[in-house]
Image (cartoon, rainbow, N blue to C red; front, side, top):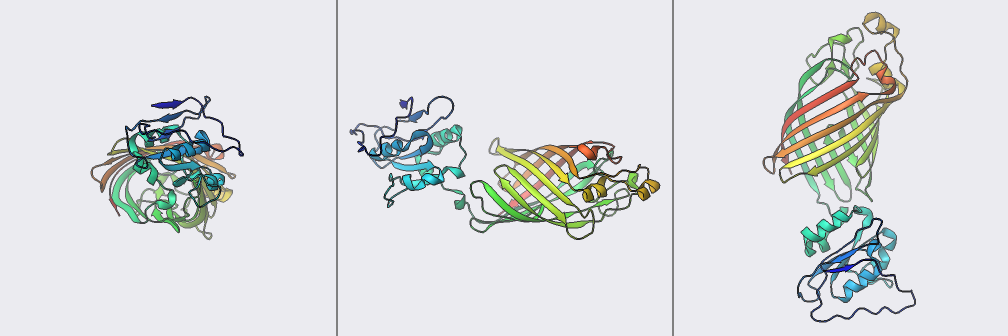
Length: 379
């Protein structure tokens, strides 16, 4: 194993580069992995034995290793895949660029996670063929995917209610992905279109639906929240919502406005952070956190009490202002019985915050929602 404790300096532009001598028993490089912390960059070269020149591949992170590493690997006969930022693509790109260092392929590091662990895993586990074949987001497969199933959930009868109820939860998610035209999806958020990711950045449009709230207990529609405690408050009608979403990496921000004067007639913004990880071939873990902001119309509909409502109900008069509604954290587990069938278990803890918590309707500011479901994936 070769270990270079610090990166050699780049030769002056006017200097003529002299590649190192190569003998028949010189081991080829299988992978170059960088660590970029407080100490100098460390380059690790793993022995392969005696493969013929050109039979092996090397992954080089140019920012950490320097362009000298591209020249070195090429002089040893390796198939080089270089990683660099967008402004340096021309310098290290494959010929015929006149300024090219002659790498065989390029990976734009704006589309990759800057992680020493990531490169170490690729170098150790994936093998040279997979490393050299790695591509950008534009290589993602296109077509239809989705899942359908049924679950059961336990949740408050309405936001801020001290009572809970159990309801059926339909599971339906359909996506059509195209690497150029983006992704169309129908899921619990509604119908959305999202652009292809550019440097982990994405934008889209969203059409959703707010089911409203009933001023009585669960009636003919089990999916609408309601409780007898709300008698005298009047119903909040269901309404369609339209908006936009912006995302970067694991963070997504969406803003939606009620269409027309039905329902809450207000403006709502949600920011979420979502992360997932496969713990094994069968078990997946997801974690998330988020917060919601709403304008005065939405706050008045769901948390305000007018003089007329105060006279007809058990709640005192209250006029909220715009502000944050709640914050939440969630956790989910998935167990895959087969490639198609899986079970989901999830829980969310939400807490009403700021002005919303002062509402007489917010009798229980801490809320827990639990869910268990079974679904089948298709593609």
